[in-house]
Amino acid sequence: MGLFDRISRVVRANVNDMVSKAEDPEKILEQAIIDMQEDLVQLRQAVAKSIAQQKRTQQQYNQAQTNANQWQSRAQLALQKGDENLAREALQRKKSHAETAATLKAQYDGQSGQVETLKRSLMQLESKISEAKTKKNMLKARMQSAKAQEQLQSSLGSLNSSGAMGAFERMEEKVLEAEATSQASEELLGADLESQFAQLESGSDVDDELTAMKAQLSGGSKPAGALPEGQAPAADAEVDDELEKLRAELDNL
Image (cartoon, rainbow, N blue to C red; front, top):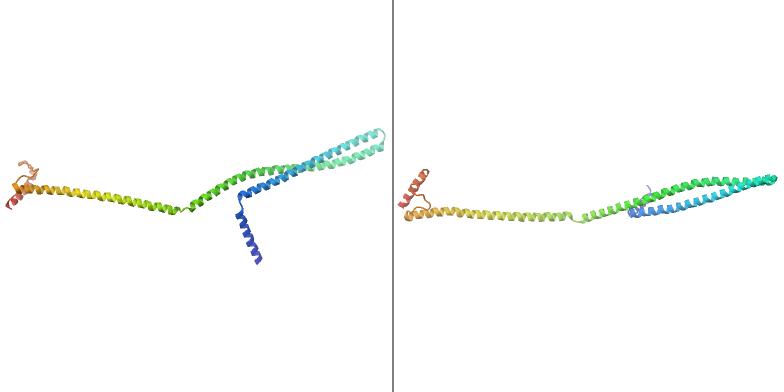
């Protein structure tokens, strides 16, 4: 491939690309309709001109036919008057006008077919323009919708959605951490209270027992809450024996 061919191809490619990028569908459609309407005006003018020519031809045909009929009548009149030369001249004039009328009749028929063809073309073009206007409005609405959608997507794309969601996730982690810390503190506080009360309760039993032992040492008084003599259950006999031994050991001290 020659250098000039390559340069020409590059130039054409760049020009085509520039034209494609510069094309606005709405403007292109509007211009297409304008062009079609200009064609419609020219076609209407052509139809009007053809109809005018047809009417003129018809008038000329009617006039030629009238002249032919008139010379026919004059030939008959001259023949009735016995003037054959005049009748022959009248028939020559009649023939000339009849031939002109026949030519105009053929021309008129051709013009009639041409007018009908132009009328059909005019109707088709008007229908196409109406359809083009409808399509233009529809495509315009679709283009506007597409542009709005593209603008929306562009706006959404410009937002740092991942960063925003990351911030939400970090804040959620902090809230969960704070809630867990608060719950742990409550549980620790409850456990501390439970242990303190457990110590108090266990300490109370020991203190009561110590108080009872002190009372026994000081005066042999019975501990508070002790059962009267003779009312101890039979099942506690061993406990009573052990208690008596303990008292004896205390008395010997």
